[in-house]
Amino acid sequence: MAEGEPTRIMLGVNESTIKGYPHPSISSRGAFEWTLQKIVRSNFSGFRLLFLHVQVPDEDGFDDMDSIYASPDDFKSMRNRDRIRGLHLLEYFINRCHEIGVACEGWIKHGDPKEVICHEVKRVQPDFLVVGSRGLGPFQRVFVGTVSEFCAKHAECPVITIKRKADETPQDPVDD
Image 1 (cartoon, rainbow, N blue to C red):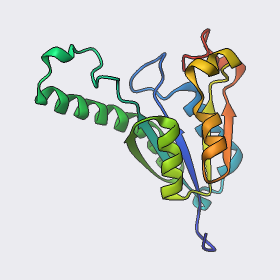
Image 2 (image 1 turned 30 degrees about the vertical axis):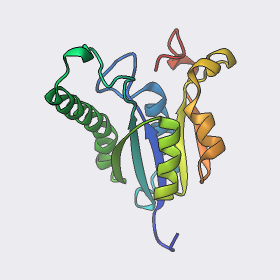
Image 3 (image 1 turned 180 degrees about the horizontal axis):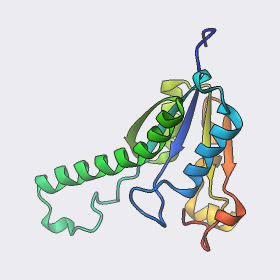
């Protein structure tokens, strides 16, 4: 990093499964707020936040649509809908950054969040990565897997994992 260049922090962000579209997940919002409070603090010009949202495609590419009756136009409308949903999610984080004067950018990728985040870290080369953690127990980790653990082991930069607060944990920790 050249002297005088802002520190580049990548944050992996996703939608809430509880509140739904277009709300950020508890973990994403917590990691973002922690980054602002503990790292950026009041040094707004010293940092550039890089928001990455990874959209996970359905197994057959459809949400609530019967794939038997799908047309090429159905695929186009789904891609447009997903793009808009992702942009609205990123808008939450980018608007907050603009309000306080922190430089930022955001983008959307598709695929397995673990793999995509690590690939983007390699491509973009941030100074470090911040990800939220849902705090899943060992049993749930086996079936759900954790993006934060994978990134901590495989990302080619330092990784900071932010656990959500106990009072923010939903009844089922898989929810976020």
